[in-house]
Length: 439
Ligand SMILES: NC(=O)C1=CN([C@@H]2O[C@H](COP(=O)(O)OP(=O)(O)OC[C@H]3O[C@@H](n4cnc5c(N)ncnc54)[C@H](O)[C@@H]3O)[C@@H](O)[C@H]2O)C=CC1
Ligand SMILES: N[C@@H](CC=O)C(=O)O
Ligand code: NA
Image (cartoon, rainbow, N blue to C red; front, side, top):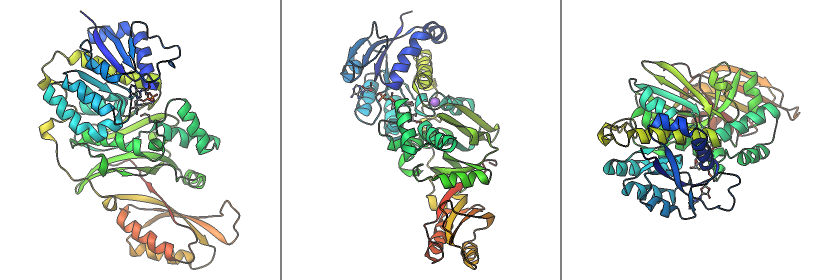
């Protein structure tokens, strides 16, 4: 049988990995797919800067649209990133009846509803395993492996760059900027690294995970998003002393009132497996009503690991290209006409436990004032500690508190009042805390 012709858009970190993995494992891949998979055309902006990448037999161009429009191409692999021209190129490929594989989570999170509707109309597949947690086959696991479950919640470390930065800062005391530069040179970071640092990339991925877990449309604008830029060394060390690790988590949870969708730094008990996922590794914990907790772990970014997911999608697409479109796995796991309109909860309505750090004047009565305010807002204290501040301020103390679960709106009101106390001399630091143990 003739090989399937692939047009590759982008020859950067993921594109070059895809070329290498397809070449290295060509025979095994063909035995799995039932046909060879051949990159016949590729587009990139940097054709003079492709190093030693072996592109013999590949027609190269700087014009991505020419690849999409070439009648020889059966599958378009979009590894350019960003929204434009990626969206236009993907829609043009679909319009021409070509299947698409992409690693572009921003594109899927923001334009996936439009893209999948068009793909369904044209009877083509759009595969996006590499878009979430790099090489971990998390899309396949949730969409197919857990299809018998009602998924109650999931929580994941889903940005490799951010986890790499937090790990290096904690273990080696390295500077934020220095570790970020290394993550960029290793090809982990997004073209705009604020996407990694400010939680936007994780929010893109959480949008996709929530959609396939709960059968809701993609709703990126409803994700509450906080990044890692405000995490301080003091908080990391106080959290460690209390038996917790600070990780940047994406959390999606069903509640009777609606769905929680949030990404933010989170204290997790250090005994949890996911608390010990370090470096560029990602992990996603998914709780299904039948299966209970399941954990998926592996490289969340990088050239070959991400290419592993791109190539797996290519194999899936090749296997299913000749099947009736109605019988394929739905893009968002649930049939397109069976998506639900459950509300996404505003962050004020979300309940979590909290870690609080307060810099206070070291005098009697201060603690009584603070605990009274917390009690007024129905906030129960789980643990409390007083620490000498690192900066040798003799008249001040750091008070660290862990609270029980409370509505975020109550916590906001309490913090506002606490900050009005003259004895509280710096803004209160608050980090959410998740035990990650119950449905
Ligand atoms: N780097 C990683 O570890 C991961 C990246 N991704 C996603 O994969 C996609 C690609 O990321 P990287 O490979 O890291 O990016 P990159 O910046 O290393 O490569 C982008 C490639 O696209 C080409 N390009 C840019 N604009 C173009 C245009 N208009 N026409 C033709 N070619 C164009 C560039 O010349 C380059 O070859 C992004 O959507 C990213 O979010 C997903 C998972 C992991
Ligand atoms: N920039 C992303 C790349 C993979 O999705 C990350 O660091 O996780
Ligand atoms: Na993946």
